[in-house]
Length: 318
Image 1 (cartoon, one colour):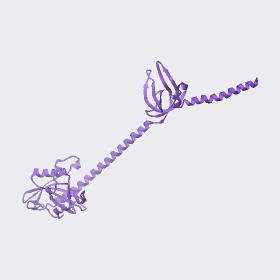
Image 2: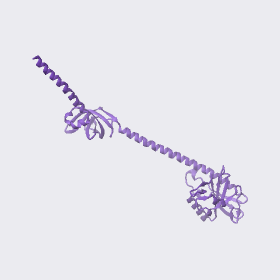
Image 3: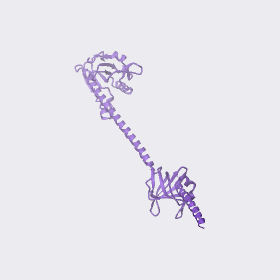
Image 4: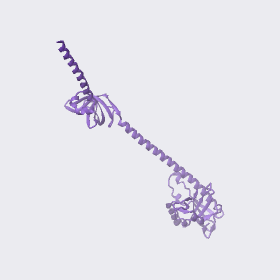
């Protein structure tokens, strides 16, 4: 009798040790989204803990005034509905781990919810915050925009400084040109203010030639446009030259000459450490400069001595 009882107990404990791991394995398997997807009835009303991506996130208020959160938890090809009271600190596309009770059918009042996991607000962990990625992305975009803004501001300031420097150089060269009109023979009728760049607003008269003079003996008027360049450079045609003016401004000088009935001349200064005393100067009638580009060999025909005063010969400025 004792021997039979011993055998029965041995079989019982053997079966017990076999069943316990199986049960444990089932409970642990319910926390696998793949196992849960295939064994929903087995995991019904059991605790599960699964990871996935938050989609279809909603923050709602019930008819009784209770705040709650619902969302779909997607893992692989399976999607489960998750419910929790209160508003959860999660965002769309977050990767989270949710721990709660799984129901194949969850009834609430007259509603039935299929494949739902009910959790507590403390039972959710954000593994990868999508909003953080978005914030980083937005921050990066704002940083790039800020950097571009700074670079544009620096560029604008450099261009402004360059214009100011060119204005100073041009003013010095104009003063040099004015010194060549001796007061005995010449009367200065007008000097363009050229303040458009300073006030950052267009002044119509600034597009006129720089200087207007009248010869006292013959009562003849002339306009003079002054251009200073640091040096010649090699152009696309492989020859040395310079760009003395832009196309549209040449057209304005030509129009000025036609409307006012007296000639326009161009004084070009090149080189030297100071525009107040250029290394070389060239005096040309406007009709001899129809294009912005002027080659050095061409300008040589109109070269004059740097210190030579302007004079009138045969009704032409020399």
